[in-house]
Length: 240
Ligand code: SF4
Image (cartoon, rainbow, N blue to C red; front, side):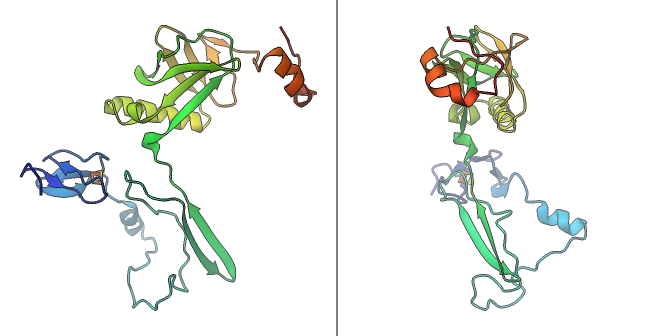
């Protein structure tokens, strides 16, 4: 029962949103369209196959013979979904045999709304005060966090930026995280601090200057822990 007769309840997941007319639920996947729950992003893969004349496996084409997987089916986990945003255990594991070979697919999921990225930037330059907002495309996507072992650290993402602010903020945060995780460069600016371009595995560019040295640790760590690993790999080690 709903308090508001105009709102209808989505029961696609345990969040059980009450959705007002013309609005979407918490996940943006379902909406109240004139009193009907509809998907906001239609599942189009099947229609693409139909349009392209692709092969389609008929659903429930014959009676179930009792085996979990039909003998003539090739099972993969591709396309498996979840009822996100509620919790669902992962991974999904499906298995079948094809020509005597075991085929096993494991599908895991990451709940992106709750994800974050720690960016470790090897530089001595001042990036910005701890706690200062880090922006991508003008939107706050994280903050400067405590420096660790000679590196400057940014904490990006997390639920407040991904889903707690405006859609623009969420999109900018999502774009920044995806780019970083795909080793692509991302332009960031820090309130009261520097502008920088960072990419995994590449020297950072800070206020237009590319770093040429990597600060790794204190003198004792440099000598005691890392010396052997560096041997033959680095041009120069400076201990101050
Ligand atoms: S979060 Fe999405 S799927 Fe879950 S009840 Fe709300 S609208 Fe439906």
